[in-house]
Image (tube, rainbow, N blue to C red; front, top):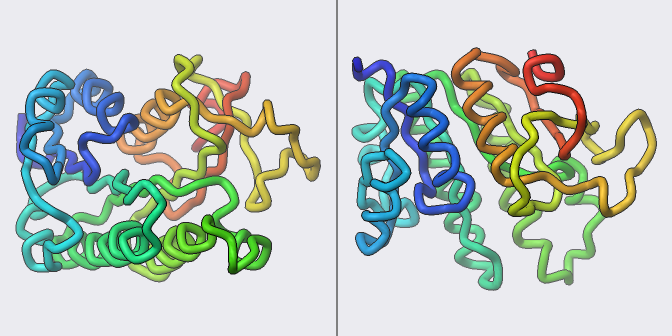
Length: 228
């Protein structure tokens, strides 16, 4: 397997990343999964990925560029997990921004980021006093920085994440999270984490949805039919 078949996942111990690693490996890629805590090494290895211990919250652009050089794609699936506004900004925005810049410097054009379905509009819809607002700001800012880059990006916008198994099929939504102009009910606006991993693998392997934002829920349309 050549270096050009390598995918680097930031946030390698996250649930989506642990599901994506074996899927990417099955598709013919090697996976470097970046983790902060060395105690997570065994789980990452069990998923078929090579653990890389690096704190992306403190790693500078040059360090990330070094890691990315020669890879086929970079995936940002990291997150601070909420609760601390400063750390949310540090990880979900600042670290994401550095990774975007580093990917460009390393010449790795393919970049996939996990966002959420209404990140593009929530800045104007969510109360700034809400505890959710720092996350909205961070994800919106990271997505906008990526859109302004020269990278062949894909922004993945799932709904509320679940641990249900993936059926390999989606329901596409617009930037408001609506489907055909209609706001779905709460039970519809959910996305299996495994489905996110399936879509992530698909867009990398098929070079699909380049410079596109794909907002999606669990649905009935096969991924390959819905996403081009």
